[in-house]
Amino acid sequence: MAGQFVGSGWSFPMRISPTGGIALVSGEREIEEAIRLVLATAPGERPMRPEFGCAIHDLVFAPVNEATAGRIQHEVFTTLDRWEPRIEVREVEVTAGDDQGVLYIDVRYVIRGTNNPRNLVFPFYVIPSHDDSDPSSSGPDHGPDHGTGTGGDGGGPATESER
Image 1: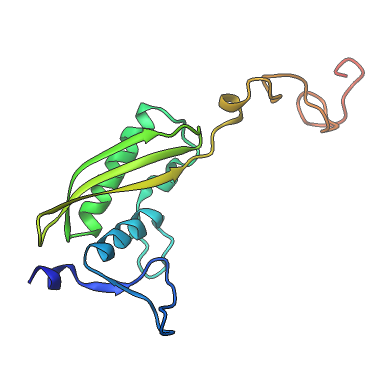
Image 2: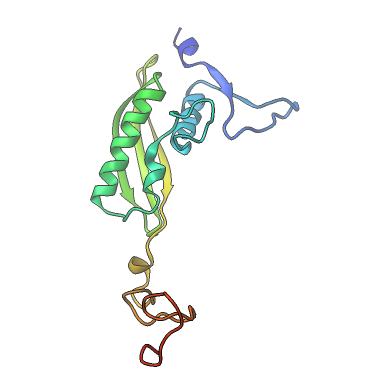
């Protein structure tokens, strides 16, 4: 009975089986791939189901801090609760990796049909700001504007005093 509840489906990402057909997955592997699919899809990405997906993609440019980790935890928890009824999410933990550009989302869940505890680690890549990664970078607050050919207000050629 539990196997029928868990089910089977196409592999994600879609691939060809050794016999030349579409590769299928079943059981716990199918649920794991379904979780990855939900987390990897941004809302609005699927035209026929625009609500489907996880809004963590809105946080790609967010700073790597506790507030961002909390928002990711909330989004992952509520998204999986809505879109994956075969599991019960027990805990979502977000930790920063050694690289400033990656956060690891650790989802601990139980498969409802079997009460089998599982976990899945989903890497989430962020784009750090230049201010965080290189304090010597030049920008509006770090030095003169080179190469634009305009004055300080951007409205026309620079006057002799602005050069």
